[in-house]
Length: 166
Image (cartoon, rainbow, N blue to C red; front, side):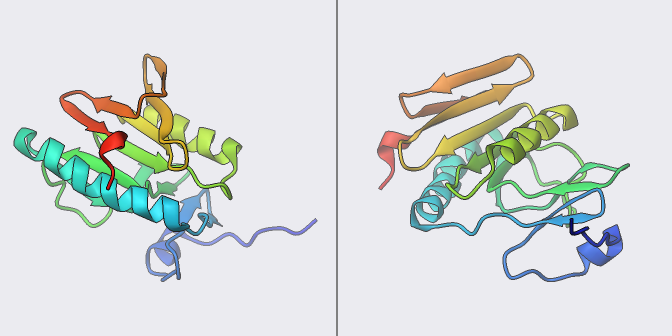
């Protein structure tokens, strides 16, 4: 059985990856490369969330590194996240208001579930998981999971309707 080489947090933060990777307890976790539907959904969400959240003071960030845990160290990179105001740091260390994961067929559902749990434990209020093929998904909060078949996703005052995707 092969063993993964452990690297330090400092080495992770100063390493360039072709497609940014996450860091979990000394190990590099590569994310699936986005395909067309994933990229299209991610781009549309960035624009829609900016339009929906701007009036409430929310900021939208694509693929932003977030330090979700100090010991053992964990860094995650949601496809999109939304913060209340500008955290004004290179790596976020406080929970965003919303993290969005656009589902990829190459993504392990187990790894996705661990990320959702990690975001919620860190204090993220809302986690959206969106399937770009069906435009269905889930809204996860500390109170539970809501299945979304209508394409209408909400997070507090923010609302987006995937039926409007261009």
